[in-house]
Length: 232
Ligand code: SAH
Image 1 (cartoon, protein in one colour):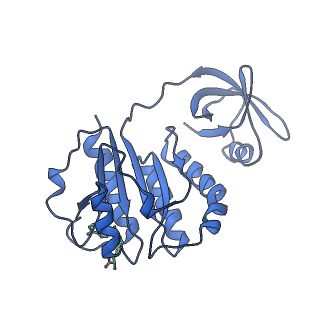
Image 2: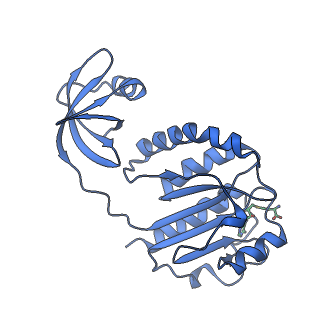
């Protein structure tokens, strides 16, 4: 079933405008046809009541229950110099069930905070696109930019992807928790100082086998494993 995003509700109606309206037209949705509309993080089953020139009027038939996927994964992603790679990571994060992504500035990451802050709108658009494609209605958050030195191990399980010092086996990790955080380095990796500081703050080093991976591969592999192994 198709999914659209609305920013406007009046009584029992949700309205689609601009890009969402265009999308509805491209999909050739007809009167009385049913589809999902996400409004303020809630999902509604709707049918098309009327198509106007500048908006589609959708009648709310019922509110759909929230998806039952409950694992809370936060990805702290050091921003790669190539910002296209970060966009790829946003897309993948939506697909594999990450709840929040936090763009992180580290010694070897992309560093211009003001450039990143201006990207937020574009990133949100990309995330929405991906939600539609993957059938996800659970909200996905793109948080404010943070510095690596300010990260706190606040989840029940806090992991640091570390291709040098990680030891043990993925099998020994606790996959019974409700909340996880995953810290991933930029293309150039972390410095030794960054790694030891994160460990002191409670992030547990994890080595993925068998090879060194690109930052996007490591991030999505780890988050995807958590989502699948800990889902109830
Ligand atoms: N040339 C860099 C490679 C960094 S890869 C270096 O020598 O450090 C980018 C990031 O992906 C790493 O900082 C780490 O967080 C993650 N990563 C890549 N491969 C990994 C692996 N096999 N195990 C754990 N983390 C890995």
